[in-house]
Every structure is written in structure tokens, then in C-alpha cells.
Amino acid sequence: MTISDKLHEEGELKIQPGWRFLFSHPAHILSFGFGSGLARRAPGTFGTLAAFPIYWAVAPHLSDNQYIAMLVCAFFIGAWMCDITSRALGVADYGGIVWDEIVAMLLVLFFTPPGWYWSLLAFALFRFFDIVKPPPIRHFDSNWHGGLGVMFDDLLAAGYALLCMSAIKSILL
Image 1 (spheres, rainbow, N blue to C red):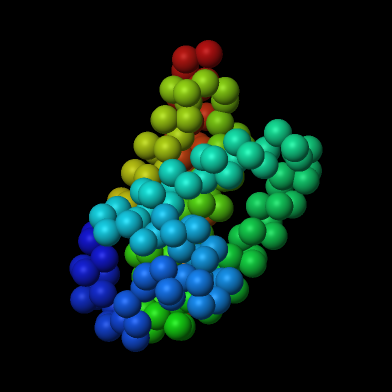
Image 2 (image 1 turned 180 degrees about the vertical axis):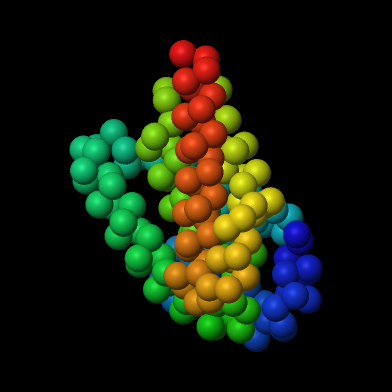
């Protein structure tokens, strides 16, 4: 779904997001994934890709418990930030808001086995489930609104990706 399709489905933007909009509030910078959500095409994919350098920079310096605590904080702070940005834009789940993809992919990467092929598979599976939105993801995407709704459907897509990776890993290893 393109951004214009999303707009048609949810209403009109109050403001056209750009760099000026991002720097008008700290919540917007993070909601738009440090600018990755400004991509004209496939902002969710660019947001998902933004999770990789964050993971590589942060994960080696945290224990497993610290990393999970960081993800929990990122999720709940993300719900608040995405709500602020959605209200400023006038669109409930604008495609350029990608903090949800970043946090969900950070979760997937935490459980991803080492190796570039596993990372590629993790990326592909997460994007597949985030785009296709099989049940119950589509239900929550359609019915939960506000920042929590923005964040929650991607958490479910991450869960599906992790289940598939676990099944593939058990078959291959």
C-alpha cells in the first residue's frame, strides 16, 4: 500500500511531513525513524532497515535482560511518540511513522541466529507479515487506534516472523 493509498483510506494530512516537521518535535524524529520514514516509496521497509544499524550499535553493549528492558521501554515510549505524531499529522497510522517497524525488527533481530542469511530471512519474514497482515494482525491494525495500535500490529508481525524462523531453524539444524 502506498502512502497515497493510506491517505485515501484514513483522511487528509494536516501537514506534509518533511525534515522541518521531523525537527519540530523530538517525537517526530523518532516516529519517523531518524528520517527513514520520509522515503517516498516503501517507508516501512526503510524503517525496518534502520533497525539493523541500531541493533549492531546497541546489542553488543547490553545484557539480554537490559536489551529486553530497552525494547519494552522503546515499545511504550513509541506508543506515546507515535500517538503525538499521528495527531500532528491528522492520520491515525501514517506510513512514514516507522518506529513500530524499528522496535519490532529489533525484537526479531534479538532472537535471530548469527549469519547474514538469517538476518535476511528475518527481514523478509517480518516485512511479509507486516505487509500481508494475516489474522489477527489485520484485526488489530483496523480496530486499535492511537499509538498503541500503531505499535501493536508490528509486534504481532514480529511474533509471526519469529515463529517461522524457529520452525525453519528446527528443520535445518
